[in-house]
Length: 435
Image (cartoon, rainbow, N blue to C red; front, side, top):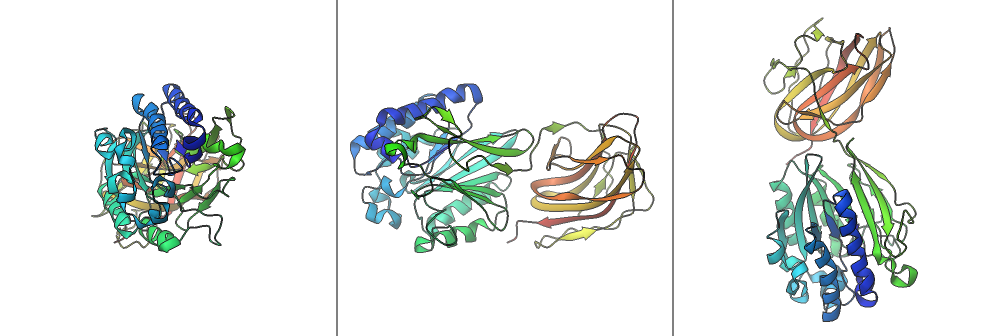
């Protein structure tokens, strides 16, 4: 869950601040909230002890209920706002309060790291058997803090990553990014090296009463919103909930604790496409290496070779590597057939393919899957349906990205005692972790 700019609640509406956190705690008892993050401006005056006590009490509700949370410092969280962008922790006293004290919070199992006395934090959580790294950067942080974040990212290369900060998306600039002191340029330069950073969250801009969602050139979702000035400054009680669906997608919805209602924000319900799904069961896969570097595996009882597949030499320079084949695979089962490529180690990769299919089925499924142990496979893309076609039909599998060692194309019939033929015309892989 994401909250931001709760500053006026700390100043004017301490009971509503508590109510917001209590609503999250109550909601979590039923829906298992994995993580809460506040993207700064926990309070309005970083020198005001009373406001710090209010914020500390509100987040203490989450702490007492064992609900994981993290934060980053906004400009109002420093007691000298003028120096907030200097990244000097001497202007921050949040670590004097238990809820924001990194030494105390670091005892939690989900804690990863903090920087500058807790103005920046990093935590991890898991959803649907996938690990997520959440890094939260202080207001307009400098290169030293960005370097700290990058070191953590490199320590968890297989995690999906969410990066938050106080001010990043902006309605006040032509390109919708806050580049004060070169901040967004420096941050993007780092983030663009890591395709597993799939989402950024930020607040700060008081004009973002309609949330702004951008998509970076590499597909990263970037979201900014802030309702602190609405309804006599009560709408800082709004919460954005992200639901990690079992089919691999992520949807977002908003709840306003002042109105006790869902979905009252314009443009706030989106779908974020990830590449995760539930565990699937397949028939036994026999490992038969075709060549070093990349292997093709098939269930021995469920294919028929017409000609051997061509060689596929996987490269690690960020360029596409492709291969074609006239091999024909046949499946007669709804449990499906897997054709698997072994990349030799876990890498963040992008893949796509073109295939030809023909069948006597009422329908069939063809989709990407992945595994890191060659035992349990997960869906990457939503399954793609092909209808009854007795003559060959060319179709493409959606381009997708994933951190994995084993990449597979799975195809299966909808019913039993049906037959599906698949020829892989071209398959391509591209390493996304380029140094």
